[in-house]
Image (cartoon, rainbow, N blue to C red; front, top):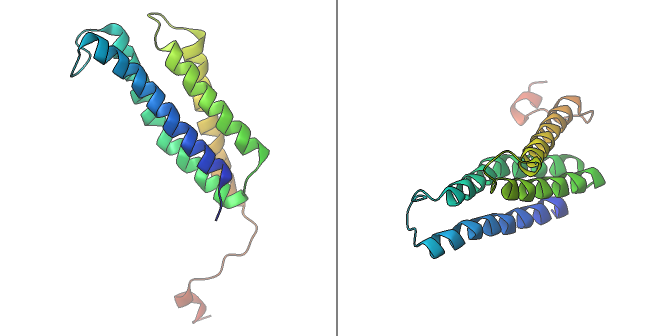
Length: 143
């Protein structure tokens, strides 16, 4: 079964994860920091941005997968995937600043909106499906 949105989105998330990790690695290499953040506040913020990405992305990927499996590819799913990627890039840049920024706040807000939208969509699909579900074999034999 071909899942173009989930496959494209998963690849984009993998590349984005590498980019966010590389931003940390550059500071580690230049500062000769092997473990932790060694008190480097920019590294600490970038590590947190990376961890935040890793915390949100698995559930969002799972939601995209199950929704696409249930309803197929659609324009709104493509848009949702694009919004999520842009939100995570904005959030990563926003985390570089000492103070709150529109990039960080906007990235977080869009991440939450995409996640909530997908969760509501998944629940709606699960509880409003009109197709008939076959009875399990053990139950249908006694009917």
